[in-house]
Length: 86
Image (tube, rainbow, N blue to C red; front, side, top):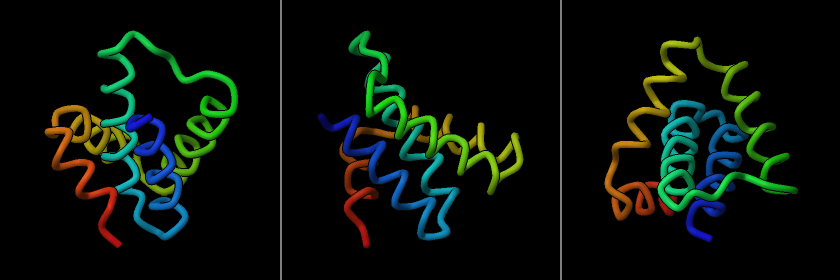
């Protein structure tokens, strides 16, 4: 559930004009699900792909991938705290 919440927070971040934050949050969600061997599925996958597309529209590829990599490598407690910031 934490991964899905991070993905949802990434959607809110990109909608709020924070694609850099969204990329980090999405990267963290990806890493958490990968570590559990669980793919995005169903509605979560649709939301994930929509958020990924919105990030791609807002950031160049290098910035997007750097943000996702940073999120994948950030400690879970730190990325959750970031997701909870207003």
